[in-house]
Image (cartoon, rainbow, N blue to C red):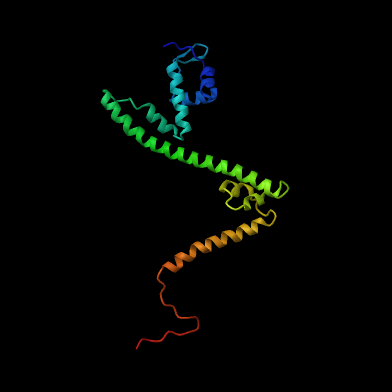
Length: 196
């Protein structure tokens, strides 16, 4: 296979920087097919595929060590059956991790879309001159709006939020306190009667 791709070609094709490609080489994840006497690195289409896989696995949140173990999957396998078993074992866990990440990303996408809609709704109903904290006050404001729009000590909203939070915590503590069986405690200032 011809080594006719430069570091720049790989960078452009994968969205990485040349520096990142060099870093992957230092980590042993990628190796140029050829290095000229002048130090110019040349890569093959296979190297490009490998870099794209590394990039995709990084995007899924895998650590370099995990990526290395995937890239070395074939090591020690002498038959297709051995490779298939190892492939299945290693990738099954990563597939579950990718699924959880996709679900999180979908949830965040929906929350962001809801947030944009909520902000536009709030602006059209109350006007753009109000304090940004007021955007977080809207009923059912998405979490991202509540977190990002509020600012400590602004417009007196901070005190309102603190009171809201205290009320929520008290409401959560109340069911726990009432569900536990209470031991009979004498009222303050009243002495317990001795058993007869």
